[in-house]
Length: 118
Image (tube, rainbow, N blue to C red; front, side):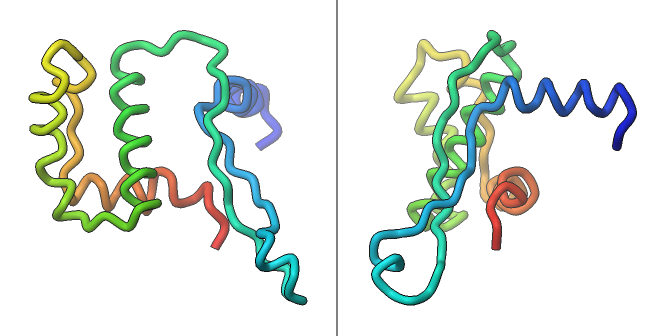
């Protein structure tokens, strides 16, 4: 954990974050005696340009967060890639976007899930 390679990679991740998760007390909860917090996701300014593959991955992660936030069923997202291709025919990102139910489940649980406290 303290070796140079690990520290350098961690620094890169921190400096080039796409989103930041922080917790804030909700107004409703702050009026009660409990100290519950609500995770808030905010997009952070990028400090470097992303390559094309990373741009597609970013779009897929944002779609997964949106689906989780709004409680979309995994099945309802099966046709999203085809819809995005028709809606945005001039977008290479939309043409390469892949996010059916199994990938959506995996991205939510293993990709972005660890960033949210339970």
